[in-house]
Image (cartoon, rainbow, N blue to C red; front, top):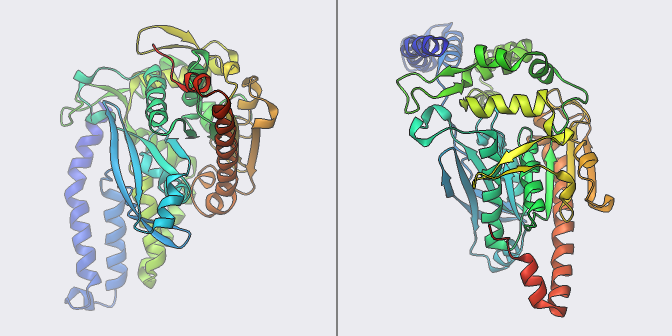
Amino acid sequence: MLYQFYETQRSLMEPFSELAQTASKVFGNPMTLAGQNPFAQRLSASYDLMHRLGKDYEKPEFGLRTIDVDGVEVAIHERVELNKPFCELRRFKRFSDDNATLDKIKGQPAVLIVAPLSGHYATLLRDTVKTMLRDHKVYITDWKNARLIPLSEGEFHLDDYVNYVQEFIRHVQAKYGNCHVMSVCQPTVPVLAAVSLMASRGETTPLTMTMMGGPIDARKSPTAVNNLAMNKSHNWFENNVIYRVPASFPGAGRRVYPGFLQHTGFVAMNPSNHAKSHYDYFKDLIKGDDASTDAHRKFYDEYNAVLDMDADYYLETIRVVFQDFSLVNGSWDVKGVDGEISRVRPEDIETTALMSVEGELDDISGSGQTQAVHEICTGVPAARKTHYEAKGAGHYGIFSGKRWREMVYPQVRSFIRGHHENTAVALADTEQAAPKKVAAKRAPAKK
């Protein structure tokens, strides 16, 4: 009943939120009688804040129209390449009429960014995508809101997530011969599983994997988020945070972990910081500091937009990642699209270079949790492994903002470029010596 109660409350509050927005505009307009009130600016700011605290936040757009590539403005066309029931594979294709720039971007590496399915939309990685587009062909997983997916589409399990990632990797590989994979936070675990299964079957695996701030081994430096998942039983989660989607949505009746509960958890981690941020926004409105108020709106338009997760996927993630530690214990079995069950064996990965990235002040994925990937990927030579800790960066700082752009990204770019160029040279040399043999090796394994 909690979901229904929440939706009823939200529906009742919506007219008041819209009314507050109107009042804010009236008091903020000096041409109106109300706008000439000596307290007009304060009243306008108060109503604006009321509107933003009460409004419903829908999924934002990526909104990437152009990107600067070495001083040349390059157009971006966003399109859906694969449309799955629970996810869209989006591509950000670059266009330019400058021949030199066009030649340059044609030879750049293709990168699949696997976005988290943990409450927020993939647009949370907008800055990640925008920065990566300078030097890479970029694809991203855009996970759908489970409350909008009809029951007729079936259930969604953690195994399905792993299978989706494999399909997306094969799709990009089919276009470019191979690709690079980057996972941010939650997907580090299923991405590693996907590549491990491909390696075990003898398929071509990505040239590189970049793991950023994820719970590969959540036992190391557990955070408040980890402790909640570890200390509550599986039944507790099923009985306390799983609800059915109300009848007003296409996914009516689907069992989900609602986004509003996840958002409440996000805010509860740092309530004083959010309260201060909203108060600062109120003061900036009064002062007329447009730059600061715009920055606040952009952040919270993204932060407050949340999605529901299918219950099966959510509960299985809690069990596999935070309770049984199945990946690091070597006990994780995944059911493929063909119904065959296979053991996840990270030690089978041999040719994929591996990079882990952590933030020094990360309060979601603690120190050492991501770096643990090197301990279980024993088949990857030490020379093809690297770890980077971003000093002074929190969880979001490793993939968004100034620290991401100035500290983390140059490291990631260098890592991808180095292994991309080295592999291209090695393949060229080998193909000249034995073209038939290499062509057979690079062909994807048949199912």
